[in-house]
Image 1 (tube, rainbow, N blue to C red):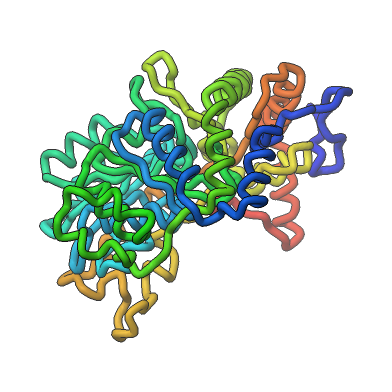
Image 2 (cartoon, rainbow, N blue to C red):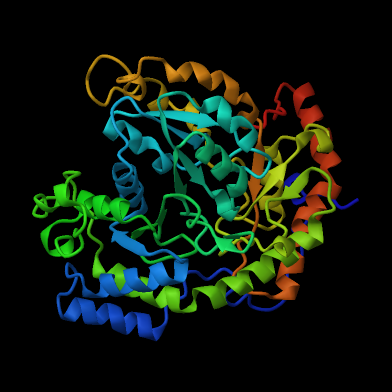
Length: 441
């Protein structure tokens, strides 16, 4: 038995050498810096030439016909909703555990968000998907959450059966593959964030990709105008007359500083993320035998992989560790020597007041149901399983360094193998009138 650091024991041992670039991200090269300086010195911020070059290269890399850059991922996702014609009274299905920007914009179009459960991989659960479909359903927003590619075979089968649009939020999963094919190429349109902390990090940027010309032109018309879109809206006749105004009433043009950075990231992205995957898989190989935790990762022998493995997490099963709460577990990990272990991930969206009572239109009723003939909030009762999907973060390793990876894996092993100490301490605290509890929220 090794006394845990949280209870007064020593912290875990780490290599007696610098960790180097183990966590450094993004990697900005001299070439990137020179490109940024060129934009600054020549006042090219609001032009479109560098952005257009990036769009063309990204579309080719992604495997789509068209790509449009936006100022951020939320704008790209909003444009995707406009592009498919999401409108008043429509419903759009989204997994409940994701970042709010995946679906909150639905109220901008008078549509209702309907939430689907997640499975153990924190991914949209196809077994729950058809429950969410009604005559008002227009689209499914698939989120490849924490880089894990969703089950696109089953999701597309259900979508095609019900004649629904599929939008893919790839903000966590740039370059990830599902059975040999990049995520973002299965649905009708994909959108993603490229902000500074993503695996594809380009400052503050968003991207939309599609193979559908009408979707592409509608998306271009939504948040771009005149100099950015008049040359691209060529086949959708009713849009040509609007080329001097952004149809969303918003300005979504990318800043070319971000476009320069994005070109540099794209150039080396596959090479860099291959090493990330090597490091992360080795980390999980070392501890996947432990009770109470499961790696959120794919079987790469199937042709799937996790791209840049953004924000790696594990699934947590408190019943295998005597009911030890995930927040207490994460607290012990932090004390033992890894300061960035946190519990929970994003909250379940259906539990947030925004999706319960926010009145965006000042109509005296929640905007989520303002234009619907049913109260979709009543279906939130089916989402209890998702509220009990516990998870925790692990090191996001950017380099394969065997010694450091083994040291971090040992932190998790030490806590799990000695978790009874935490349970004993909790029982003593309870007897003294103070109680940590087993609430895993």
